[in-house]
Length: 137
Image (cartoon, rainbow, N blue to C red; front, side, top):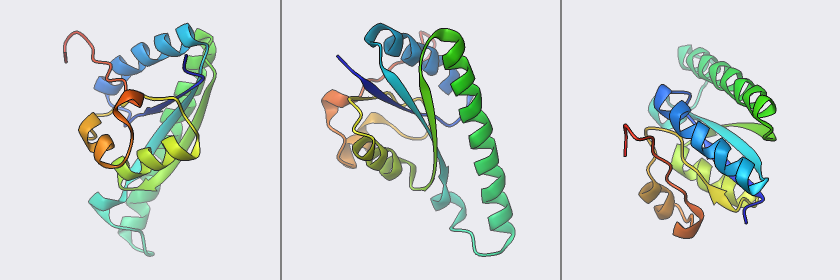
């Protein structure tokens, strides 16, 4: 039985479809959800007082808004959700969060990070649950 579930998300519509399945799993397991949004600094570089910094800040603001909406959705559905925002390589940050938060399961709900990328970052296969909507299966 899972007590802690990590749900990395990118805020896309595809992620939203998977999040519903992840919330169902959390409800069934009576688990706490750790929603994670990673600002991909590989794509834009680390900010250094430039226009990149403004861009990264915008993405972080979007991520925090998305995480707040997931916390609220969880409350409505009887699921405890804690939001976490990080910067860096998404796959590496997800793997680090899984370890740091001592989660039992990782349910990737994003489009750019695959279960195989998570395995390469050290997340054990038996901890990854790949929930796909009927349209993406």
